[in-house]
Image (cartoon, rainbow, N blue to C red; front, side, top):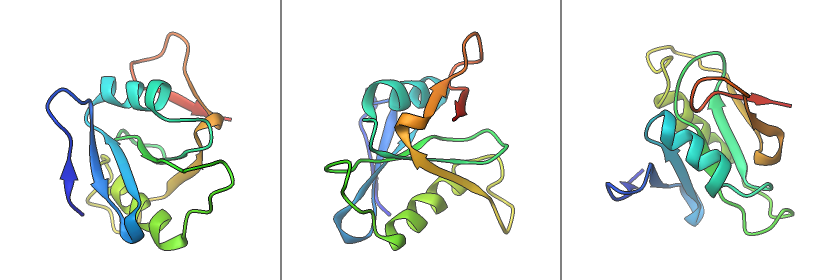
Length: 115
């Protein structure tokens, strides 16, 4: 997948199959901005479980827009590749709507919990 995103954006835009796009945080501040300011409640949010790494957001046109399985799989691969578990052969990835993701009060920048 091709990555774009200017130096001023705290995240990369990555082309996914079938014309979909993923937004991938560049760093903790980028993850925080992407998850709390850019992502809408119905967008898909992905992150490698139990390890540090980039937040990945797949924007949806509406809350009822179905994201094809191959697009979710490609976004999950991005989340795994942009995590501390990138060298593992299997990386569990959390996939949920952004509305279920909340920053941890008093926690490190970019640290979230999933409800």
